[in-house]
Image 1: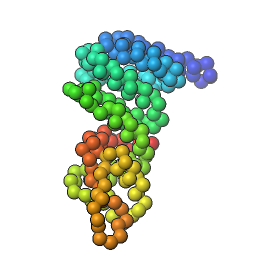
Image 2: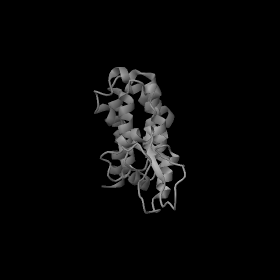
Image 3: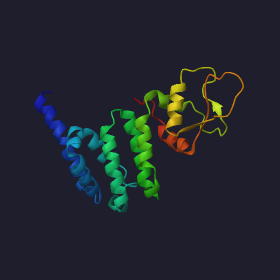
Image 4: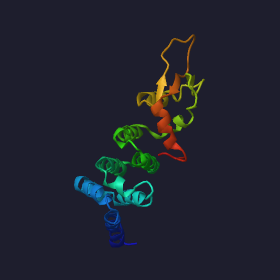
Length: 201
C-alpha cells in the first residue's frame, strides 16, 4: 500500500464517524461539540474517534434518543472522547468504553464519577492494574495482598493513593514486609471494569 492509499484510508475514518453521528439524532450535537473543541486531535486520531462513535452506534439499547439529547450526557461524551483519543493503551481504552457505557446507562449521570474513573485509570500503570487483580475485593478486613514480599509495595501504595485501596495504619507487632489493605467502595466499583481485560498496557 502506497502513501497516498494510506492517507485516503486515514482520512476516511473521520468521514465515516461524521456519517454515523449525523444518522443518530442527538449524537450529532455531542459529536459537533467534540469536533469544535478537539478538531485537530480528532484529525490526528481518526481511528480512535471512529471506534468511539461506532461504540455508540452499536449499543442502541444504551444510547437511546433521549439519552443522546441530554445535555449532561453530551458533556460527558465530549469529556470521555477527549480522554479516549489521548489514551495510548488499547486495553485502557477498552476499560474507558465500559465505564462510559455504565455512565450512559446510569439513572443519575449527574453524580456518576466518570471523571474520577478516567483520572484514576490514567494514573495507574500496567503493573498497578495487575496487582489490583490479585486483591481480594470481597474481603472487608485489612489483609496483605503479598505477605512476604516488598516487590509490589509501590504498586499497592499507588492503589492506596488513588483511593482504590485503604491502608491500615494501626500498630502491628514485628516487621511487616507488605502493608495491610482493604478495598474501598470506589475500588470495588472500579474493579468491575477490569474483567476480561487481560493485557492492560
